Amino acid sequence: MSTLAELTPGTRARIVSVSGADAIATRLMEMGLIEGETVEYLGPAPLGDPLEFRVCGYRLSLRQTEARRVQVSPP
Image (cartoon, rainbow, N blue to C red; front, top):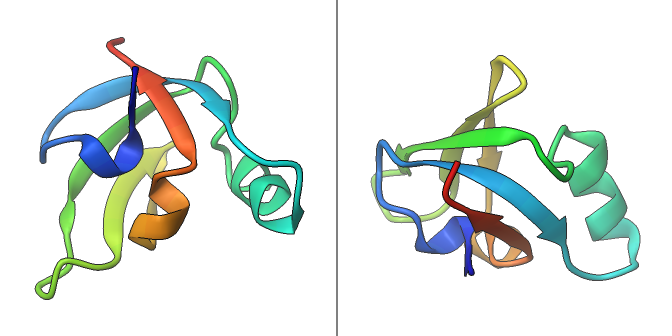
């Protein structure tokens, strides 16, 4: 299993889980990063952080530290 931070641009994946039980994990789930949802990695910002994803029909930017908390599997 990999994380959102390990995907390559253009890759789609299915969310398996969000690690942690803190405010950041809760916020990630509120933004649509929930189990079973499909996410597409669009690419990094010019300096490599943040990373941009498409989830639930909108674009979402996450820092690499946040993206490492979301475990994904192939769609």
